[in-house]
Amino acid sequence: MLWMAVLSVVMRSVHILSVVTLLGGVLFAVTTAAPMQRFAPWLRWSSVLLVLSGVFNLVTKQNIPPRYHLWFGIKMLLALHILAVSILLSRSSIGEERKTRLAKGVLATGVVVVVLSAYLRFLANWMLI
Image (tube, rainbow, N blue to C red):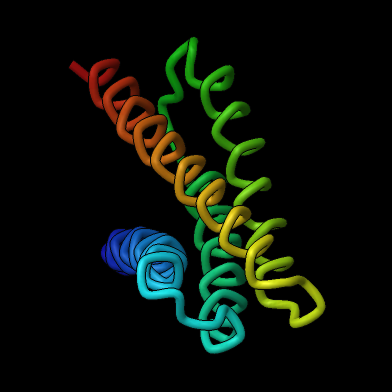
């Protein structure tokens, strides 16, 4: 059981670091007007790690409270928006002006997903009390 606890902490850390890398890279590219192509490998790898660690975290979750699924579904739809637009941002066929607009949308959606994640964590912990 100790290995499962360690694996859970590692996967949660990978999940959070992937979100930080993805949103931080997009924020940096928008604020510095750096070309998005420079961050394409980071966007791809953070997206892959985000999905893998997220699936692991979902499968191993226990004691899911009643309203959790509703908010989790909304969070997943927004997260899929972030992943899809991140894939678009890593392509060279899109103009820089459009990439900047898309990146700002990713950042706004990312803030909403982070807030929803905090709320879901609150729901899960509150139900344990």
